[in-house]
Length: 349
Image 1: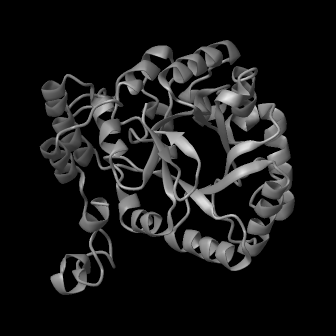
Image 2 (image 1 turned 180 degrees about the horizontal axis):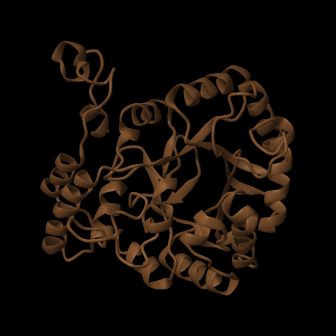
């Protein structure tokens, strides 16, 4: 397993990490992801640790806290061998203070997460979404106090827009609050929007990307193909409406190239899709999930090798989409490129 620094922090994380969204699964979304119990979760953790995966990610909204509870039970007795990451900020109830990132909500959310996970600290705590109703200063001050109290080691965010992240970093710098070192983002061959604003920002500000849904919400498993119905057992039957939309023809074109590369490399379609992500700029760790041991072991096959430069270029070409304004058309003009380097320049770093 390769290990990398998380953004501009001193924390070292594995290139692949494990997402516990399948643990204790219930409800229309998380139940479709999986329903791994404690016994199965311990086995998953065993396999991960043997392979060098030490970072485990969850959230309070995953099955109403059941994911945190199962993960906590699965790592019991080996807490010093793992990094625990969780998130809060999305609604967990109908009450007026059961959503967002106010001081009251964050203190309660962290304490509840610590109880469910059976630990006295979180290695990484991330805001699950931006809360426009709470002053950024209040949120960061609360995180500062929780960090000073020893409950949090590092802080990050998830699903922030570029201006939201940059404003937060500026406020942190102004008052000396902890800086966000991680941004958990949606990024895949069928969803490259991260590259337009958030990747250059991350490179400039030292924020590491933790990638969620690297297989495009289950579309890059090798089982979804042109001219064929969705296979039985695909979670897309129940969860497609919850995730980022993808144009079918664009997906099929990408899968065609992945199929060609699978023949050339002897790797599977998901292994190739994950490997491409592992070598993208600013990516600190790619979060993989699994409903069973077979799926987990297949995902582990994404590390320890690399596509050739020519193969990566083929995937880049088939998966790229025209960037929205103001990135297009100005980023392609040489006069502007001298003062505003295009993404290609960012990607070389």
